[in-house]
Image (tube, rainbow, N blue to C red; front, side):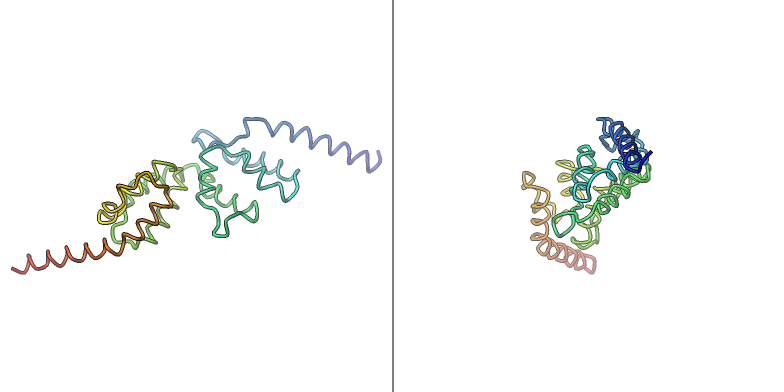
Length: 194
């Protein structure tokens, strides 16, 4: 067998394997009963068969609605992913440990702004939402509910806004809310000293 014949045979085998791994069952939805590791192993083979430039597009085409939302919530500041490894880091962090999403939901349920600075709260909130798979209107409603009351009272009428717009409104309301909180604390201190 010549080198070209061997290469052709190898190419045929890889194409057949790729055809088997590109079925609709390879769409990863992020459901608890799905085996992320098995899905990832199959997709890694598919990605090895496409050019570097097409890998991100290929990987994203194999993600269902929830995993895509998690990836979208973690888009780099530059506005786009520069390598497929950045996406794998997000997916591995969310789905690599089957119990991670459950733990994130439990932590999310206990998480409130309390004494955290708004920027710190926003960062932690986004991480927990991504890990727990919380997206859309639920994320917006939970954002308002988990903020300090002084901030949430100022933005609650804006539920029709996007999540990003709610975060911006919260950052505008935060200084006023902090002043109101300090004023209340000061008033309570006077009542206790009487």
